[in-house]
Length: 334
Image (tube, rainbow, N blue to C red):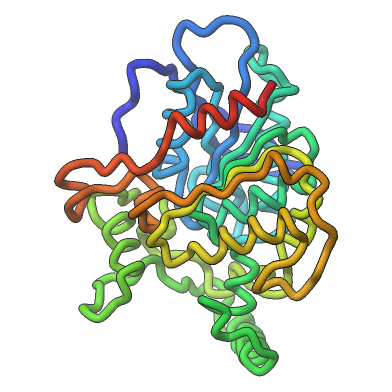
């Protein structure tokens, strides 16, 4: 997917979650580093694998002096769990917290200096983990989706009504009896000519040589049809206005998903935002929260930095501000 940097060491590791699942991960460490280092756990996008975007993020952070762990979530990639391609609000939040457990036990990690990065659908999960686990001292949500919001409300909240949710529940109930193991499919392939631009962008990343991987659900047969059912009746971000640690929400100016990041940031700071049916108190530490909009960037540009031509050809756009991310973590993991 990407060449291994000559500035880092890489090794395969595994660790256990509190649900008895074994997660597979790639650990990236800066070469010739001494002493205890700050560490970062990375996951996402939702439906991807650690050899895709999360591995790239982890490697780039290791180049900048962090111990960085990119892991496959439960039921996906090389991690354990049956049936495959199943998602759960609580299990997936635990995935991040178990990654923090693992990093905390490493001899070269300062357990008081651990952050996380969640990409795409794992951006929302990262915020939920940060709200739950005070050991997480800094969080980046990159090009985030709130998977619970989109599962319950549809894209752009177009299905945010009882009738639509009831119809979806009826369909899921029938599917559970008809064929609970049926797969919903990954990114649409072949690509329709009239597909929205963001679907074309997904196709270019997940299906072509730019980002395809054989263990990625998005690149192949996707999730089980009922595999994300629990998300529709949950809300990840109810308590993010109580996150005291540092948070950077990063999104592309042209991303179709930008509304997720902007709303999450606003709710996190103010306790209220469009798309949130609850009103909470303002954040007790708003000064360490930041919204970063990357000019010209689409959703998938923040997977790998983007390219000027399709299939990862042309010139790299280099739209992921790696040094900015490193500065954010260096400032807040101390």
